[in-house]
Length: 213
Length: 155
Image (cartoon, rainbow over all chains, first blue to last red; front, side, top):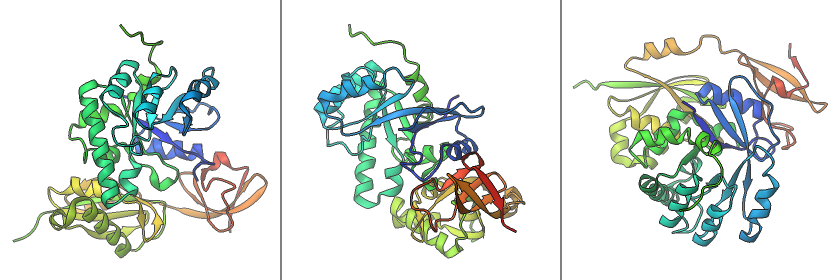
């Protein structure tokens, strides 16, 4: 079974080198991880390292052009969500693999229709463990409620969830067991959480464009 | 009546010599903010032993899942960004003491990156943590030998 950390930020976005991430995450029990905004990484024997383009604050009209830039590479495309209209245009743009930062999007930014679109197109929705660790009080409660909504929609529409540490520092890394413990605060079905740790493989290996019937 | 306890072995990252009272404060804050005073009283966390980078933390039997989750939710200890990773749970301290690796050796060294020498701490597993002094975000702070051009151990 594949167990991936869905998103880590190596130097210069963070303070950790990719080889150090590989060593730490392998020891923690991951079989691979996704690094953001970096050049393709040379292969390692013990752990899979995938690269991604993390697109933030891209205007809706420029999304297709931005994504097309990386179409010829083997990179995954992560796009930050926004209000409902923006999120829908992200989810309908070909080439998007994962919708990120759902805890920061406005209320109703990810609704039932978005959930249906994500399920049809096999686009993952990324949930980061970092706000659960770094925030306190009301801010954390809001994130927990938002994540609970996402889990409820996932339970109904079955779009892939991608769990990640969003680490920029060595102290932000979490083991699979810790990620499961943290997300079990929100959703009690551990099978869903366990499956989400490997869902990035399903998203990466999805076949061709989906045709609506 | 005698209470039944469980003990959790945890690894502190990054490897920094924290005192047990600093650890306790972080754990108590995390448990209380996550579960409130009622559950915190039931968990009854207590730091039994610290031998950097490992610590043994006690809780009431049946509450170890709560404690592990709260340990995972720690972002800093005494204002220093740090994480506590739960490793194993047992009914006795002795079992956990046996699980702590006996040779955790660290050596001071100098590493060369992009032609510049930096002070660093090298662990036996090949982890290199650069000392913060003199680093101004020009290079990553946590690296391995693969990222260095040269490595000299201090006498």
